[in-house]
Image (cartoon, rainbow, N blue to C red; front, top):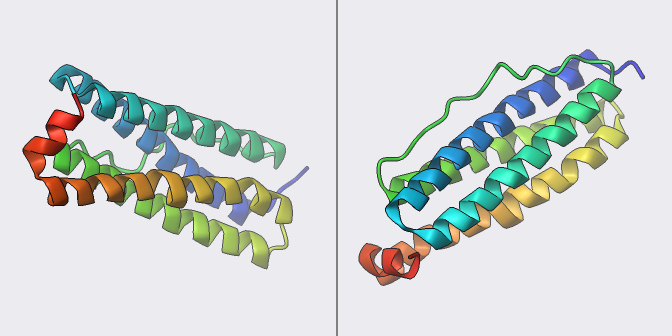
Length: 155
C-alpha cells in the first residue's frame, strides 16, 4: 500500500529516535552492570528490549507503506557520567520521543491515516506511562532518600 511520504518521513524520524534510545539504554544498562547496580541494569535492559520492539513496529509500518526504513540516522545519544545524569538523559530522550510521537499522531489524523495512528498510540503509552514515568520516579527517589541510599537499594 503506497503511503503518504510525509507520514513515512515522520515514521523514519521516530525510528531514528527509537534506535538512539536503544543505543543509549544498551550502553547505560551495561554501565549499571559494571557498577554492580543490578536492579538498574535489569530495568534498563528491559527498556532496551522495549525500544527494539518499537523500532521493529516502525520498520514494519514503513515497509507496509512502501517506504524505505532509514536505519542509519540516529538522534544524538547522550551517555551519562553518573547514575543521576544517566537517568536524566534517558528521561530527556523519552520526552523528545513523546513529543515526536504526538506530532506524528496529529499528522496521521490530519492525513486520515488511522491505521498508522493505531500503531503509534501504544508506543506513546509506553513512552509516557511506563518509561518516562518510571524515570521520573527514580529521580524523585534520589531526591527523597539521597543518592547513596538510592544506589544501595539498586545493588
